[in-house]
Image (cartoon, rainbow, N blue to C red):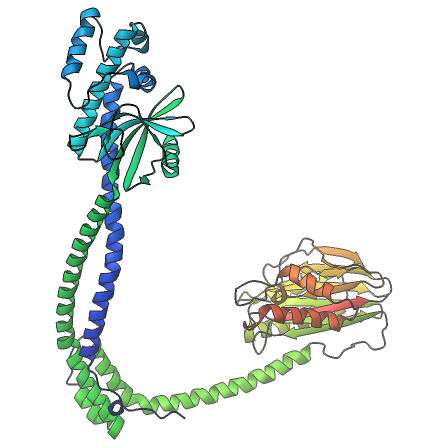
Length: 590
């Protein structure tokens, strides 16, 4: 036996110190968890801001492009003739001159309102001027957007239908980058780049109205579909450095985490002060009183000391409770002894009740050694000391055998008492003569009388003519029987049930006729078989019951029941038996 160590033998450490250590570790853990949580939160917040930022930019640029009535044709013109266009990027002086030149020849021409037909009606020279003028205006607006929104890149890009490459049409610049076709510069008109797989995926998702950011060489690109023209998709796009976003997230995370940790430490300090004052000091008094009782067993002294603690919280209740416990400990010991004696008495009586119940059921097998026309075997295993299941079989006369399988609602002693009544009534009424439906009708009416506890019993009753194998069965809400024809396999016999006995007075019960031939076998059972449950709360079920029966290839009813019981045990494993398990197997020899 392991020796119990007293308080004085163990390492002494105050509760306050323990709480302080817990608070320190708790603060560190909370800080670490908060850092991770706040990182995710900051990332979501900043990315949401970037998304709103992108939406605003796309809305602005989209609205500006839509002002040009013939923009679809103009975009197509830029793609096809970009290399031949004479455009200016960061200024519009030359473009103004071109506008004056064009209007001198086409006085009523409007850059904004000209349709595709209007533009096509111009001479090739004027179409080129028109495309250059619109390009400059669009480019100046993208330059303005980049400056206003402080974005790394904002652009209009076209891709072919197969997304082999991207053609940059208008790329904004605030003067901080050179204008060229090199990566990292503000792209010139017609700059063509090969798209990465991630960019292609993002562009395809954009066509489906789903925005997905694509990362490429330190930049994150976001797109929005603008228009489709023959052979091309035109997108609006923005890009920002991923390192800048990560830095924003890191700074915001550190700032928020520090604020949280400081507040946590202030809260912890206040809590420690209050705990020491209002909890630990009164608990120390309780501890000393308990130690005194442990040494001296002087309950009056302990009660007097604990009465000095006049707190109205749990500690005060603890002191009062311990005082009451000390005063009533002897009384509790006496009550425990009485309860133990009573449990032993009940256990003995339940043992007797178990034996009486077993003695009421047929237990001698073979039950009719002088009859060679059939063989029968049955078992009943209650979930508790006594149960509500029962089976019965008896000769009504020399040529008729009655088979009964029943299950009383509930378990334990009440179900067992109701079982005794039901079994007695069924057997007495069956021996008086009549069909199964007539028998169940009368028994049901008798059970309904004075049934204030509203017990009920499901019953399968069959009367078989031994000489011919003809039988009549009535099923009062019980399980379906399982039948095996000669040289075949067991199968459930499904037909309509009637209501259980003891529920509603005056019910008519349906009969079911059947015929057994030599070599046929019948198996009847209670729901404790099909509803046997394992630790995963899976039920044994009808299918497993039938499989278990078919696993036994012999005509011996006892071996059939043993096989089913073994399969149930293997299925259930260490799980507790929830319901009574009762089975009856009948073999007709003819």
